[in-house]
Length: 226
Image (cartoon, rainbow, N blue to C red; front, top):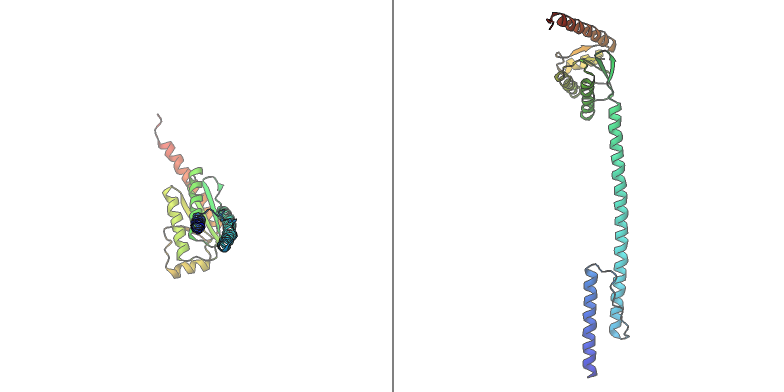
């Protein structure tokens, strides 16, 4: 009878071990066997509890590392957002459009032109044209170190977009070296009004502005009164 009881008791303990291991596998890291019996099997139960303890410690360390990594990643993402915003702000500042005279806008371009900067430059210019109603814009490229096919295409796109809004663009600051480069590359800027210096462009723009005013005045006189 005693032997039968021991077998039954051993089965119950084995079943408990299986249940504890199943609980741990399901994520319950607080489950323990905690045997109070001192026999040969209790050593196995204690060893299993130790194994669960080690596993729990390792998992908690990994969870802590994961949380730290996620926190660092979040900070890096925030920093990247800040950097991108600062880059956008710098692009805005590097493409200022100013109204320098009645009906005349000027956009000084300094540094290398790329697709992103050209897009910002174009948006700023078009927005200013709409806001002010100016019909003459000067793109001064004195500060652009080189002009290649890509830069020329960017300028052509900007001029074309401005024309669609009714503004004529003048490109100034074309140095002899840049002029030779444009000819050498076979870039056609014949459809664009160009001037060697900003001063020349301003003089031309003011003369054109005066002629436009005179034409508008003559048109107003020619219209019959109601």
